[in-house]
Every structure is written in C-alpha cells, then in structure tokens.
Image 1: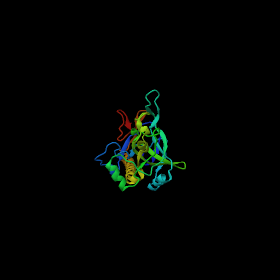
Image 2 (image 1 turned 120 degrees about the vertical axis):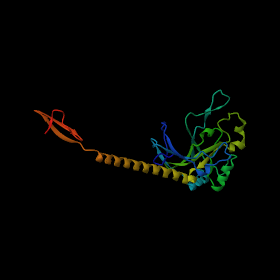
Image 3 (image 1 turned 90 degrees about the vertical axis):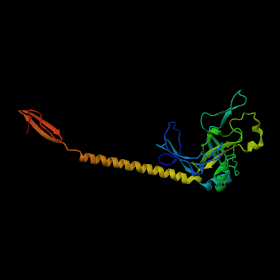
Image 4 (image 1 turned 30 degrees about the horizontal axis):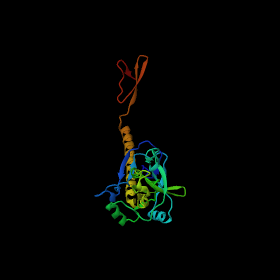
Length: 266
C-alpha cells in the first residue's frame, strides 16, 4: 500500500483509512479463466492520509529475488495461517485471530495452479511468481491472499511481493487427513507470491498520481489564498466620522457613514 508520501509501510494502526485510488497491473486487468488464485492479488493502493507509525520498506529487485532463491535466504510471510490444533475437535486446526509470522525459504521450482494466465506470465517474466517452502503444520490459509512477503537486509525490511494463492496442505485439512502424509502434497505445500519488482511501471503510475494530487492540492491552496487577498483588496473600505449633538459625541464607522438622527457631522 502507498500512502500519500508514496512509501511502502507496515503499521499497527487499526483505524480505517480511505483508499483514494487503486492501481492494478495491466497484466492482471484481463483474466478470462481465473479461478482460485486469480491474478488480482497484487495492486498498489493510494490512501487518503499517511499511516501512523510506519516503517518504510523498499522493494526487492529482481536480482535480489533470484539471490534469495539461490542462497536459500530466510523470507518472512505474514498471514493468519495455522495456529494450533483444536482440543477434542477431531484434530481440526484453529486459525489465529491475529496475523502470524512464518519464516520460510523460496523454491527454485515454481508450482502453479491450473491457471493459463499465470503460466503465460511466468514464461514472459521468470520468477514473477515465486513459491515459499511450507510444512503441514506451518502454512498460510486461502484467506491470506494479498499478504506480504519480505526479507531482512541487516535491520531493514525489504518487501518482495504479495500472496496470490496457497496450495497443498492448507488450513482446512485435519490432523488425521491422508493429505498430511502424502509426499506429493507435502512437497506442494506452499504459498505462491507475485514479485512486486516486475510491476515497477504500476508503482511509478501510483507515485505520479500521488505527486499530481499533491501538486493539485498546492495549486488549489495557492489559488484560494490569492482569491482571499483579492477579495479583501476589492472589498469597500470603511471610514469613520464624528457626530455631535450638544455635548454628546459619537463615532460612526461604515462604508458610507451617516450620523444618527439629531446628530451633526463634525
């Protein structure tokens, strides 16, 4: 998300903030056969005001993402995921009521769902979709789509991209489900993420919008101030006269001052 200062950030604020505009990458605008994992989970949101207590994030480059895969560097997923087993409930899993942090790795091999648009996009842009390595007891849920993936560069958070979908052993499978011992599905227990660096043009478009909005606000403020000065200058000026009636003296201030009845202008 981009607030009005066009920086990416994370916040613990729970107060709702209005979205002014959203930018969806052009590759995502037409999706003729999108089912589960539809390619609309990455977008840039412009907010009406800055988030409170934000730590700015930079965006990982395509080269950095390739390095994360090659070097098996830790990456961090944020989502509700699987939290714990429900006691006395047939081994069912309970999802957390707050976002959780799951440390994972990136896979060298991409697993995608049966979505031709995703496959075509991956052919044009290698690593545009990346997969995390999860486990049956430590995975994301389907409702976590759009959640962030990032890594630590020293003490700095670096944003990689947004969750598109999850595959394999997900939250809905109980502890005793055969899926949890099936090697095929264990291998495919992962999160599919969009790499933000491939959509720099969309990010640039959002930043230009923010810059234009800021400039428009400045122009509007300058125009209003100018109009107020001009209105003040054009306003009729008041003058003051002194009126007397015997020993009584009154001062009258107006655009066209007139002495009260019985008083004479001094």
